Image 1: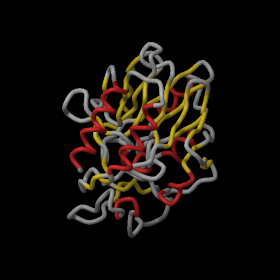
Image 2: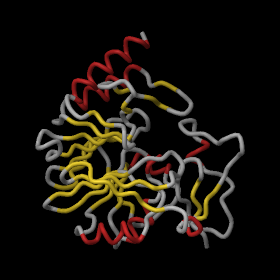
Image 3: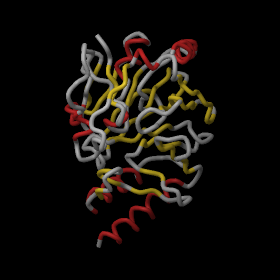
Image 4: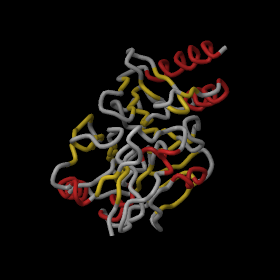
Length: 268
């Protein structure tokens, strides 16, 4: 049986002898099936050509990506605390060196996510690291492409993972789209980990919000306002998006507020 990875979105699917006929993640309007049709990668076959790229970002925070890039090219974030470690978002594969390094740091207490496009290799990671609880919003379970008993749903708008590490559901991109509030980040000023629930733009100090990024489908003003209002209640100064260069180093709360105001004004 082969673990098939969607070449377009990076989602691992339930092991099977032949590739699935479809990737439901890509057939959703928030993603896409390319002109060449549905394409697949064999998880075991890419071990010789791909590896995890590990980078220390700030004290207590590391990034983990895949090189060469697979699918949409995001990187995961490893949050380290005195009470344990949390993986925020995921990437399509896990190599032995990264697995050993995480184990040497004490393993993982939980895995949690900004949205379904970053679920990718979560089951592989969980199983390889000893059955780490995979915490997913109950409202987004339909977007799981590789079911597992290790998945533990949560409901509501707040999930306290560890002291100083809290996930907040803010909606928008997906109903369960979330952000992670890390109190110790940015030298104690707080950091917000957002994936692309909130997208850092090329213009310094600005963000944006979309239902679909590849298909350029905007969010309604009410959804953007909801995200802005919920984030305004959190404590943070720095923002980390879902890619290496998607960072607002300081005054990120102000950046989100003014970006939401600009976005809503443009819709009007």
